[in-house]
Amino acid sequence: GRYLTLRRSATRRPSRPMLRSAAVLSLAIGVQASFEPIGAYQPASQVTDHNALDQDQAAIEAVLSKVPVAYGQARSVYTEGGNSRAISVLTIPALTTGMSKGVAVKATGEDGNPVSGAVWLAADTGSTQISVVYDVSDVQVNHVRCRVGGLPVELQRLDGCIDITKTVMLGGNSMQVLQVALDLEHAS
Image (cartoon, rainbow, N blue to C red):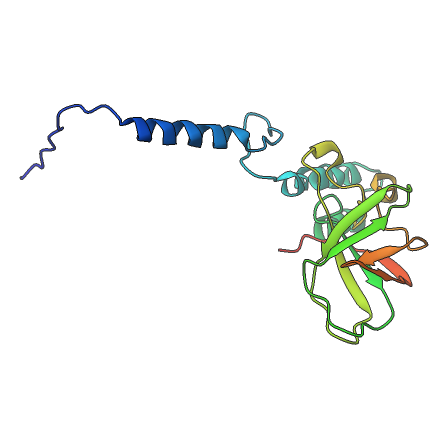
């Protein structure tokens, strides 16, 4: 058979501009935020919300270890989650204009501390419900302060859920919220 022979050209030193570019690039890379490691894995982006699925698995195992076994509760955790992708559905007066996905939401949590998120699904004029996905922290332990979904009551965390008795700002506009349904789902 034929073999391809690669010849190396004479060894060349990198030019000064190339070295400067490499130095600037290495500094820029070093400035990037570092995310909390997951075991020996060092994520390059925020994955705390996805990583919380193991907390749902632990909740399922806890529910299945009860006597008698709570199969219905285990199924609820499996299908509705609770620790990942926290979403609240706000019932509001009919919108006079549509609301785009990603519009900033600022509110107060049940514990009196600020809560932030974004509109999860676009809503048309006349809609009376807005889905809000809560912002997620880079720290796994407290990645989201509103955890409900299919979790058993003893594992739910409501302190960071939107308090509808306080002002809720949707895209900079104050909105009266009539009701909030806590619906933690694993939406894509």
